Image (tube, rainbow, N blue to C red):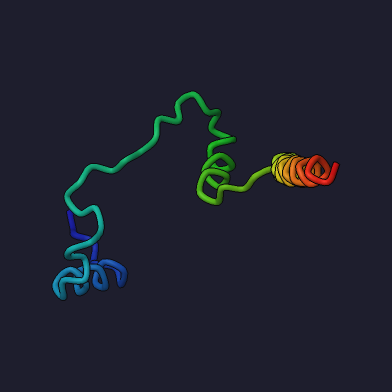
Length: 89
């Protein structure tokens, strides 16, 4: 039949290729590392991707970390003051 004329985007891409703007890109010539997400329902994949890329922790995890740090500091304080008390007695 007839060939469709190149779109503006096609022209921009062709010009970029000719100028070498797509040369030496990170991962060029290597296979894509696509995770196997067949076990994740389609409607949850975007949410999982966002969580994975942004590494958010739920509030309860952050609070747990704070509590563990406070507990460790308290144990150090009790140990130090206990040694001080035993030296004084």
